[in-house]
Length: 639
Image 1 (tube, rainbow, N blue to C red):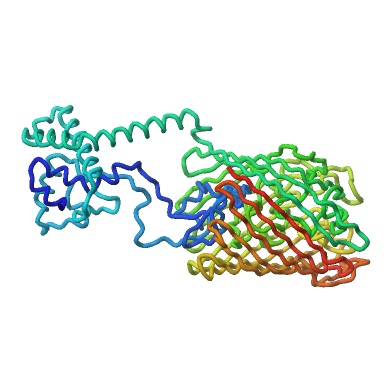
Image 2: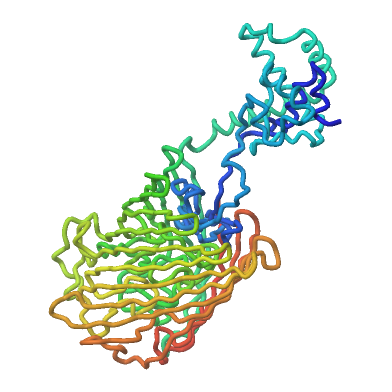
């Protein structure tokens, strides 16, 4: 029988009025996020939410993204992955990709507001035959509420449980009226009717009250055992087997190695909109100053210093086994603070962030779905545009102290920028030399005096299927390196120029992802890095370029599984001027290429296994090197 019909009965009328509200009252209030994240699968974002990072991610991102509320953030944008990748873009998932808001979407919460007038219900009109009865009951008892979109749905059939929930609500309202000395407002005939109804619905009322008691008991238990009222803990554990063949001439294939990386992230909110991210990590990769103990050094494809190489995997740090600030050794599985960042909104469209252990990828959404150190691509080459990695921008160890802003120009346009200093904690540069012209604090000292970077990204989403990111960075380096960790020529960027020569870098790049369907996306990037000697005594310059294109699959063969196939050119010196060499002495110049494929099995909500391999043609731009294959079997645990 329709609910409006009941409204004519004086005693039962106000019960009927509640029928529309009962399904809502029977449920707890729900806060609905309009967004991504990332981690992160929304019609406006291709990737599953990484942690949510993609890492903190990449990333702590994933997202959390408390500072960038859904209505203010881009949904990335990076997968943004469903499982945290713990690298702030994915393990904390600080910021998400752009997500267009549906015009018909509900308000941001399902909180139920009491109706004080029938006119507040958009689907109840004065011409409706039950309008007067409804209005009378609202004014007399005030125990009616509608759905969160301001509708009553009077023609909808209801269940006995829904009716019982409405009855319970009116009983409570009448008790309030009696308790507040307004019992004269309740008519005797209404009380008699209520008593009969209460007897009729005893089983349903008992069930509802039992459920409420169970929920309250469970809530009390959770509150008593929760980690913190203000802090959330999440983590990621990566265990991987890595093997390789090829490399430099006359080299034996290295042994298969077993490596690990563990990250724990604490995300604290003081206002509900801000985030303080504290990340701890330990890993057993080796390398140090000269690269000893690294797979890249065994292949003969690493630079003589700092083990930069195109054979590097996605989840190893840029400077393994080394504190590059002071050239001191970091032992295997030593616990380090790799993330310390505070994000807080200051206006409706403006969010600020600052921290002493941060990365460029923490602030800039990764447009490509291949990003995710623990979940997606297995190589360092595939995950991010090289411009984001310049100046140690994604060192994996929170190398820089940084501060910046996020400005949401519109729902589909977002501008972000930061200033970072890699040796902000050192008052001055050491006078001791590790190499001629290279201090034992090779990156300099001071917040504004040492190696530093100014970087920006404009993220644009012209349609739900298209994400575009444009990057620019200006850097100053105390020594002759790019600090990307992507290729061996990263060290000695100006070939033939002394290692202690300071540099200025201007880097530009663009990344695009086009979702052909909800499960297939094309993605690629292009980048150019222009390097000039910053010393008045040296005239030298060079240019590096890189590009990548690939296809990403989601829910391939089984829901939750992803895969990627990609091809591209690692950073390659394409021009040189002044005293800089185009080709280092002893190399046979050839364009390098990178081919990669991987498939991620989502074993459970918290465990994934990713087998994959990448092949390097003309590794490090030198045809003397043999074609090199690196195979990876990565297991990732998230919690």
